[in-house]
Amino acid sequence: MQQIPGYQARNVNAFRSSTIVATVKRGANRHKVLQVVFGNDGSLYVSFPYFAHRTGLLSVVTFPATGHAESFVNLEPGGRVTSHLVKYSHHSSGLALFSQTGKVRSEIRRQSAALDRQEGHLFTVLINGLQGFKRAVGPRDAEQVTPERTVLTFQLPAGSDPESTLKIVGRWYDVNRLRISNPTDSAGPLLPTIDENGQQRLGVALANPAEQTRHVLLVTCDVVARLGVDPEMMLFFGGFDPRELMNDTSREAQALAFMYPIHGAEELRGKIGDVDFS
Image (cartoon, rainbow, N blue to C red; front, side, top):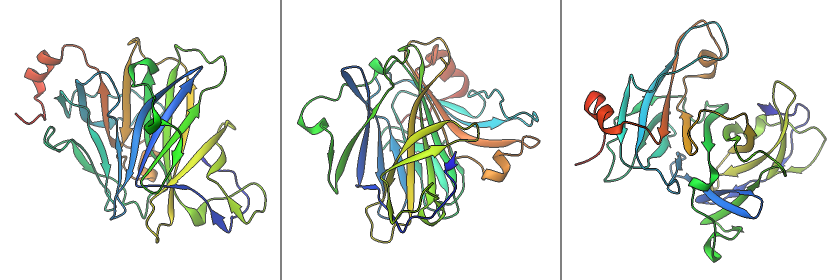
């Protein structure tokens, strides 16, 4: 997905906080799904502390050279089991990894694109069963914007199928490369987007509160056809190879992925090992 072609805004506004909590609302219920944290060195972290299921599979996955845009990937080769929810780190250098301080060793890692050269797709989260995430209740979870903590809400379309899969995508852009459909001095933090199929969505621009920030994380939230049979599931992809390699379906490419929950965890742990600290 890219910004609607057109004009460059003189100023791009974004929600600028050290920590941003993304919530999703369906009907009267609102659930916390993830946190985005901006590091002082320009690194980006995405954590998932709100999911009910703690046993998952972390992996470096390979997209085969099939010649087609869509392909199946297997998380077991290159994977390790964990009993904890992890944090995804994308450092400014491009080093991408899964970890959790004092709980998970950061062995599942790879070199991705440095953030100052990154453009476009940074990560995708796919979710079944919004009820598997903690409810957003109480004053601290109210929608708010402060330099330290911002709480945002994505409203799902009225009448959307509760059995559909929730898809959250983060895309990384230099603000000088964003284009707006109409001439304007200022745009954002809500930005209309359009993908290669002509599908329009509203993106929310997030940014590091540091003064010299020139990139935004544009986050969209939508529902797609049901993925898998698990009533509650969370699947993540990030840490991709450079864009030109990911788009070349004649060549293998790699990324990081995780899936929660997994079935037969103890048997799988004995087969491929884990990354949990004792």
